[in-house]
Amino acid sequence: MYRLLEYGILFFVMVILQVFLFSRIGISIYVNPLVYIAFLILLPMEIAGALLLVLGMVLGMTVDFFMGTAGINTIATLFAAFCRPAILTLLVGKDEVKEGGVPNVNRIGLKRFLRYAGVIVLLHGTVFFVLESLTWSFFYLTLLRIVCSSVITLLLVYFCQKLFAVNRQGGYGEI
Image 1 (cartoon, helix red, strand yellow):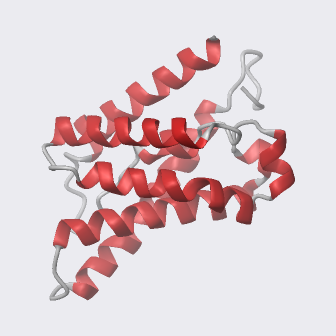
Image 2 (cartoon, one colour; image 1 turned 90 degrees about the vertical axis):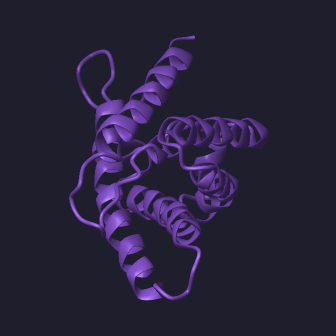
Protein backbone atom coordinates (compact mmCIF):
# COMPACT_ATOMS: atom_id res chain seq x y z
CA MET A 1 0.00 0.00 0.00
CA TYR A 2 2.84 2.41 0.80
CA ARG A 3 4.25 1.91 -2.70
CA LEU A 4 0.93 3.05 -4.16
CA LEU A 5 1.15 6.20 -2.05
CA GLU A 6 4.78 6.77 -3.07
CA TYR A 7 3.93 6.43 -6.76
CA GLY A 8 0.94 8.73 -6.31
CA ILE A 9 3.22 11.33 -4.76
CA LEU A 10 5.79 10.81 -7.54
CA PHE A 11 3.07 11.28 -10.17
CA PHE A 12 1.82 14.46 -8.49
CA VAL A 13 5.31 15.91 -8.00
CA MET A 14 6.40 15.18 -11.59
CA VAL A 15 3.27 16.78 -13.06
CA ILE A 16 3.55 19.83 -10.78
CA LEU A 17 7.24 20.26 -11.58
CA GLN A 18 6.61 19.94 -15.32
CA VAL A 19 3.60 22.24 -15.46
CA PHE A 20 4.67 24.98 -13.07
CA LEU A 21 8.46 24.91 -13.29
CA PHE A 22 10.06 23.22 -16.29
CA SER A 23 7.54 24.33 -18.91
CA ARG A 24 7.88 27.92 -17.73
CA ILE A 25 11.66 28.12 -17.57
CA GLY A 26 13.00 29.97 -20.58
CA ILE A 27 16.48 28.43 -20.67
CA SER A 28 16.72 28.39 -24.44
CA ILE A 29 14.58 27.58 -27.44
CA TYR A 30 16.66 24.41 -27.71
CA VAL A 31 16.11 23.16 -24.16
CA ASN A 32 12.69 22.04 -23.00
CA PRO A 33 13.07 19.51 -20.16
CA LEU A 34 10.29 16.91 -20.12
CA VAL A 35 10.96 15.70 -16.59
CA TYR A 36 7.52 14.15 -16.05
CA ILE A 37 8.69 11.07 -17.97
CA ALA A 38 10.62 10.12 -14.80
CA PHE A 39 7.36 8.72 -13.43
CA LEU A 40 7.15 6.22 -16.27
CA ILE A 41 10.85 5.37 -16.05
CA LEU A 42 10.70 4.66 -12.31
CA LEU A 43 7.69 2.34 -12.37
CA PRO A 44 8.45 -1.24 -11.24
CA MET A 45 9.95 -3.47 -13.91
CA GLU A 46 7.33 -6.17 -13.40
CA ILE A 47 4.31 -3.88 -13.96
CA ALA A 48 1.65 -5.29 -16.29
CA GLY A 49 1.70 -3.94 -19.85
CA ALA A 50 -1.93 -2.81 -19.84
CA LEU A 51 -1.48 -0.93 -16.56
CA LEU A 52 1.70 0.67 -17.90
CA LEU A 53 -0.18 1.95 -20.95
CA VAL A 54 -3.05 3.26 -18.82
CA LEU A 55 -0.64 5.07 -16.49
CA GLY A 56 1.23 6.49 -19.48
CA MET A 57 -2.01 7.74 -21.00
CA VAL A 58 -3.17 9.30 -17.71
CA LEU A 59 0.21 10.96 -17.24
CA GLY A 60 0.23 12.39 -20.76
CA MET A 61 -3.39 13.53 -20.59
CA THR A 62 -2.81 15.23 -17.24
CA VAL A 63 0.18 17.17 -18.55
CA ASP A 64 -1.69 18.00 -21.77
CA PHE A 65 -4.67 19.25 -19.78
CA PHE A 66 -2.62 21.63 -17.66
CA MET A 67 -0.32 22.80 -20.45
CA GLY A 68 -2.93 22.96 -23.22
CA THR A 69 -0.82 20.99 -25.68
CA ALA A 70 -3.61 19.12 -27.48
CA GLY A 71 -2.41 15.53 -27.08
CA ILE A 72 1.29 15.82 -27.89
CA ASN A 73 2.35 14.70 -24.40
CA THR A 74 -0.18 11.87 -24.43
CA ILE A 75 1.05 10.47 -27.73
CA ALA A 76 4.73 10.76 -26.74
CA THR A 77 4.14 9.21 -23.31
CA LEU A 78 2.04 6.36 -24.71
CA PHE A 79 4.77 5.58 -27.24
CA ALA A 80 7.40 5.53 -24.47
CA ALA A 81 5.16 3.33 -22.30
CA PHE A 82 4.63 0.94 -25.22
CA CYS A 83 8.37 0.64 -25.89
CA ARG A 84 9.43 0.42 -22.20
CA PRO A 85 9.10 -3.38 -21.69
CA ALA A 86 11.16 -4.16 -24.78
CA ILE A 87 13.80 -1.59 -23.85
CA LEU A 88 14.01 -2.97 -20.32
CA THR A 89 14.44 -6.50 -21.61
CA LEU A 90 17.08 -5.49 -24.17
CA LEU A 91 19.13 -3.09 -22.06
CA VAL A 92 18.66 -4.31 -18.49
CA GLY A 93 18.29 -8.02 -19.08
CA LYS A 94 15.49 -10.54 -19.03
CA ASP A 95 16.55 -12.00 -15.67
CA GLU A 96 16.59 -8.60 -13.96
CA VAL A 97 13.14 -7.77 -15.32
CA LYS A 98 11.74 -11.09 -14.05
CA GLU A 99 13.14 -10.39 -10.56
CA GLY A 100 11.28 -7.09 -10.55
CA GLY A 101 11.92 -4.00 -8.50
CA VAL A 102 12.36 -0.39 -9.35
CA PRO A 103 14.83 0.31 -12.17
CA ASN A 104 17.21 2.66 -10.38
CA VAL A 105 20.99 3.00 -10.15
CA ASN A 106 21.19 0.87 -7.00
CA ARG A 107 19.20 -1.96 -8.56
CA ILE A 108 20.57 -2.19 -12.10
CA GLY A 109 23.76 -0.11 -11.98
CA LEU A 110 24.62 3.34 -13.27
CA LYS A 111 25.59 2.32 -16.81
CA ARG A 112 22.47 0.23 -17.45
CA PHE A 113 20.20 2.81 -15.82
CA LEU A 114 21.58 5.63 -17.96
CA ARG A 115 21.21 3.54 -21.14
CA TYR A 116 17.66 2.49 -20.23
CA ALA A 117 16.52 5.96 -19.14
CA GLY A 118 18.38 7.61 -22.01
CA VAL A 119 16.61 5.53 -24.64
CA ILE A 120 13.19 6.17 -23.06
CA VAL A 121 13.89 9.91 -22.80
CA LEU A 122 15.20 10.04 -26.37
CA LEU A 123 12.18 8.19 -27.79
CA HIS A 124 9.77 10.33 -25.82
CA GLY A 125 11.53 13.56 -26.80
CA THR A 126 11.72 12.56 -30.45
CA VAL A 127 7.99 11.92 -30.72
CA PHE A 128 7.20 15.07 -28.71
CA PHE A 129 9.36 17.46 -30.75
CA VAL A 130 8.51 15.94 -34.13
CA LEU A 131 4.81 16.31 -33.38
CA GLU A 132 5.40 19.81 -32.06
CA SER A 133 7.13 20.98 -35.24
CA LEU A 134 5.05 18.98 -37.77
CA THR A 135 7.34 19.94 -40.60
CA TRP A 136 10.60 18.80 -42.17
CA SER A 137 11.59 22.40 -42.89
CA PHE A 138 13.17 22.73 -39.44
CA PHE A 139 14.71 19.25 -39.33
CA TYR A 140 18.08 20.33 -37.90
CA LEU A 141 16.50 22.70 -35.40
CA THR A 142 14.17 19.91 -34.26
CA LEU A 143 17.07 17.47 -34.04
CA LEU A 144 19.03 19.95 -31.94
CA ARG A 145 16.03 20.44 -29.64
CA ILE A 146 15.66 16.66 -29.26
CA VAL A 147 19.32 16.18 -28.31
CA CYS A 148 19.64 19.18 -25.95
CA SER A 149 16.33 18.57 -24.22
CA SER A 150 17.03 14.84 -23.87
CA VAL A 151 20.40 15.45 -22.21
CA ILE A 152 18.91 17.88 -19.68
CA THR A 153 15.90 15.62 -19.09
CA LEU A 154 18.16 12.61 -18.51
CA LEU A 155 20.14 14.54 -15.92
CA LEU A 156 16.94 15.54 -14.14
CA VAL A 157 15.60 11.96 -14.28
CA TYR A 158 18.87 10.74 -12.75
CA PHE A 159 18.47 13.16 -9.83
CA CYS A 160 14.79 12.22 -9.44
CA GLN A 161 15.65 8.53 -9.17
CA LYS A 162 18.28 9.34 -6.53
CA LEU A 163 15.64 11.16 -4.47
CA PHE A 164 13.03 8.45 -5.05
CA ALA A 165 15.44 5.64 -4.07
CA VAL A 166 16.07 6.95 -0.55
CA ASN A 167 14.58 4.39 1.83
CA ARG A 168 13.21 4.87 5.34
CA GLN A 169 16.56 4.24 7.05
CA GLY A 170 18.03 7.26 5.33
CA GLY A 171 20.33 5.31 3.00
CA TYR A 172 20.05 4.56 -0.65
CA GLY A 173 18.34 1.35 -1.60
CA GLU A 174 15.22 -0.18 -2.95
CA ILE A 175 11.85 1.16 -2.03
